[in-house]
Each structure stands twice: as C-alpha cells, then as structure tokens.
Length: 113
Image (cartoon, rainbow, N blue to C red):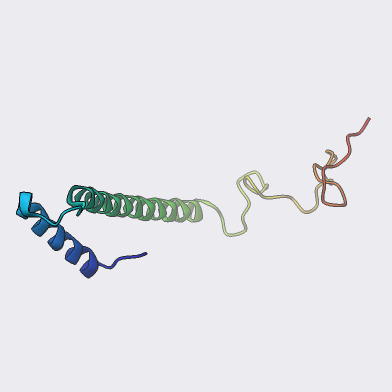
C-alpha cells in the first residue's frame, strides 16, 4: 500500500493523540510501533533524496567529461597518430584472430586444441 503525504500526516496526528493520552490510550493500539514506522518512512525519504541528488551530480559530471572529450577530440574521431581512440576499430585492419568466446549457436565456443 502506498500512502500519500496527507494519509501519512493523518496517521501521524492520530498516533500523536494516542501517545498524549498515555494511560488512557486505546487498549492495544501500537502507538510506539507506529511512531517507529513513521520515523523509518521519513528516514527513507531522506535517503531517496540523497541518492537522487548524487545521481544528478553524477550525470552533470558525465556531461562535463563528454564536453571536454568533444572539445579535445577532432571531428573525424581520429587522434594525432591517425588511429581512433579507445573503443574504436579501424575498418581496414586485419580481422581479430583471437578465438571467439561465443559459439555459432550462442553457447560457449569450443576450445581449440
């Protein structure tokens, strides 16, 4: 069950009233347990906000890195020695002679002997 802010506030108010009543509170009402649960919900909200802020900062840092790379890298994608940077492949180069890790059927490739 997902509770909105209004529902949480109503639960908090009822629980505060039960806690104020003390010895005259409704028998069996778990006021302390409800208080603990509400505190846990508030702590989780703070954690969520913290992680969202961190993710936003990370995204901004990645954008900055991309901008720097775009400014440094020439438009044709090649570096000063005529080769592409990491992760690029020269289309005219010899094919990779290493053994593939995946077989033709999509499973593990058999080992060469």
